[in-house]
Length: 87
Image 1 (cartoon, rainbow, N blue to C red):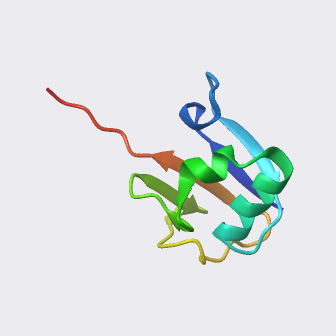
Image 2 (image 1 turned 135 degrees about the vertical axis):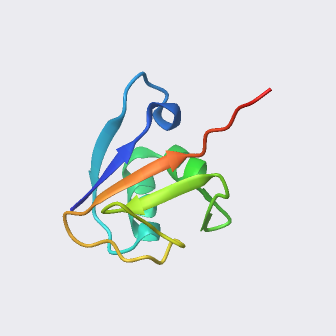
């Protein structure tokens, strides 16, 4: 089972959290998570079935290009929203 590490900004908390989810692809992970925990995370990460422009998803430290990327069993998946700032 893969572990998704979620930043506080996406889970509404004050610290990063982790959740274990079954799935062979990025899409399956987020769909299965939505089935068990509700659609909020999936809707924060995906738009029209694709990873949102300002969200980065990494499987075992490697950035993925899309939702059909394979996720090995026991992989660590990180979701990182883009940060910006300036004057």
